[in-house]
Image 1 (tube, rainbow, N blue to C red):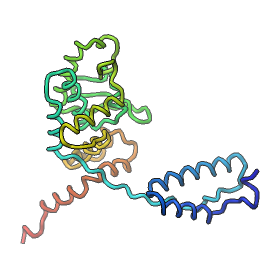
Image 2 (image 1 turned 120 degrees about the horizontal axis):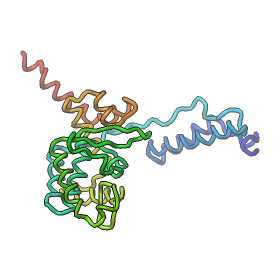
Image 3 (image 1 turned 90 degrees about the vertical axis):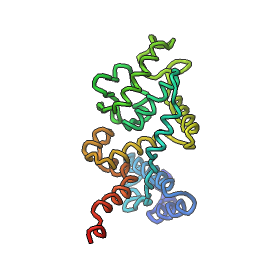
Image 4 (image 1 turned 90 degrees about the horizontal axis):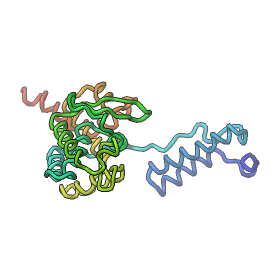
Length: 256
């Protein structure tokens, strides 16, 4: 095989040089992705007997700093909620979806995958199928429960209401993930927030839950994270603000 031929053998120095070249042209995250792809290739080569040992053994992936995602403020969320004001079908639907996103921290697939039986208005809860096909129940706030109730009542009048159990309906049938994304971008523009992706609302939810003092174990459960490491990443944007609040509370200068 060419991979094994001595004149074409790839060394650890070659890999490290390749990574250095990537870092000179691209962002660290891109270099890290290419590094992982190369690792998968060499792992296959070793497994299939093309190589005795991976030249990546002992190398380290590019360090990638994950910058905290800026969370929306309460004023931003009120503006976003206000952009959906009205009693029309779309207004009631968009209000319910947006409130579920920032009140419950749902992922894109979780919100789009909701069915009617997943929503319990009496308990104020929604049941979602998360990553790893793990099912979890999430509490809704009173205002969010009311918004979902208002949407479900107007949903009954939709021409597609009796044809599907999917919670969210659009003009032509079921509202897809892409439809939800487009709706959110439109409402964010109307609210004066500019571009806004759905994942930022999940970060915002985690930020405000941490800021309000929600215990990490409860936040991890409600967010559907299997590892505390992901919880730390999502709560990163709240760290500085929590520290400043704690400093004001315990300020030595105010005691002297």
